[in-house]
Length: 302
Image 1 (cartoon, helix red, strand yellow):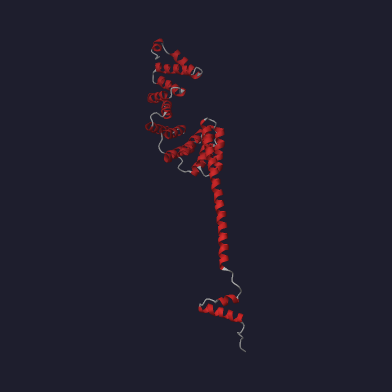
Image 2 (tube, rainbow, N blue to C red; image 1 turned 135 degrees about the horizontal axis):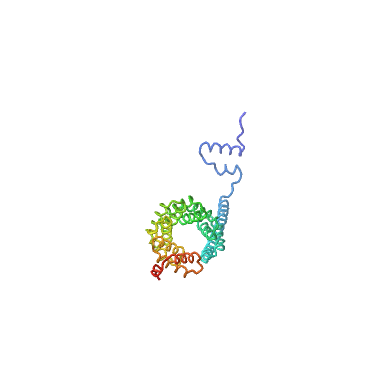
C-alpha cells in the first residue's frame, strides 16, 4: 500500500524536512503551511520600546544614587567642619558626636575613627585606643594614629605595647623630634634608661628647641645623679618654657646638686614669684635660705 502525498500540509512538512536536510531554506509556502508568521517590524518596535524603558529606569536609578552620594558627601563635610571647630575650642564631647556621624556616613574612611580617638584622648577615656586601632586598620601607614596610640597606651601603663606603637610611628610616619621624645619617655618608664637617653638625644638632634626632649633628658640625667650633665638641658627647657614650674624646680635641684647654691636660690625665688601658691617651692626656698651662711646669701644672684 502506497502513502498518499496528495495532502498539501503533509507535503509541505515533508518538503520542509527535505529542505533542511539539503540546506535549502523553506519557501514562503512552507512557512504558511505551519501557520501565519508574526510581522517582523512590530517585533522590532516592541523590542526598542522595552529597551528604552529599561534604559530610562537605569538612568533614573543612577541619578538617585548620585544624588544620595552627593548628599552624604555634603553631610560628611558639614560634620567634619563642625568637629574640628569644636575640637579647637576644647569642646571634645561635642566634637566626638560629629566624628561619630562621620564614621556612620563613611565607615571605611580612617579620618572619623582617628578624630574620635583624639577626642576621647582629651576626655581621658581609654576607648581612644580602639578608635586609633581602627584608623590604623583602615590606613596601615597612618603615622599620627600610631603615635597617638602609643601615647595613650603609655598613659594607661601598657608600656610594651606603647613602645611598639611609638617605634612603628617613627617607621611609617617619619623621624620626628616629638616621636623620638615620646618613645624615650616610654622607654624611661620601662627603666630602659640608655634607650631613653638615646631617643631624647635623637629628638634634640632633629629639633634643639623641643622642650619635652630637653626637659626629659635633663630630668633623667638628674635622676641618675648626673647633675652637671643635666644642667644645660634643664636650662634650655626653662629658656624655652619660662613658666614651666617643673622645669624650673628641677633646674634649681640640679644647680644645688652641682654646688651652685646661689643659682638654685635665684631659681626658687623666681618660681615663688611666678606662683606664690607653690608650697613645694616655698618650702625648698625656706630650707635653702636657712642652710646658707650670710656670705653665701650675699652672693645670691638677683
